[in-house]
Image (cartoon, rainbow, N blue to C red):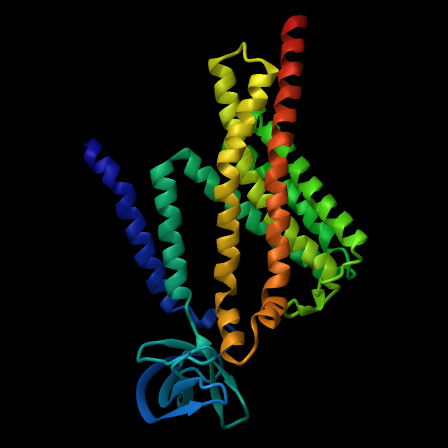
Length: 368
């Protein structure tokens, strides 16, 4: 009986994932954008093209037969032309049974926009979250709940930015960061857990100091070398948007380190209640030093991974490293450096808050 009880959640998860595939393959009527299913593809022409920098790509033209699945044209069969190259940077090939989004160039011409992918990524997301919930139990459920709340908070924050004047986004995301950090730590660790509040205060302190130092440096240097105008798709004041992006990045890095360090300090104090202040400081520094190097390199590698496509594109089109760095990497590198400052500051901030709470707790015990 126990064996079947352990298998049942996995069976339910697989069933829900497969059911979501079926539902999402037949949800075209929920969209206002025209959606069609590819019924036949014929490759009508192939060729090669090159540019002055020696970049060569193979081009392919497809004649695609599509059956419309929604709108007032539902059931109509039409033929569109899809052209793509081997790089697939802008356009992509289509295959029979693909569902695609369409647009109308005029009354007689339809165009392929992009693939409809919800029937793939939503079931995968359900399966991954299901594994988390089943394998981690209550902690997994609370983690998924905190993730959902943070997504909702993010949507609300962006919506508030859209309906307010330019320049408020940094302050909106500051409020978002405080609430998100409190809810994430509280749901996972418990709101009555003293360790949770020490981590929360450490995160706020280190993040605020890192941003304050960066703002002082920007002011002293008069932002020389900073090209906020190079940020992609800017629709409002660039600096507040850059600082908001940096705030969220620093928050994540600091929370990661603070959780590990504070948890270790609390665990060591529980084993050795008679630890001196010097020993607590030494332990905190040692833990911080162990985490700092790996976490800083992880942030740098994540940043570099994001920049690889555009960096290669710029370099292959005749641009030098200096121009490529300025156009694509300079602001991201600054964000990484600010995050690294936050990681360093987490160690003294965490130690100070641990000592403050320790002193407060001992005074409370002495009075009681």
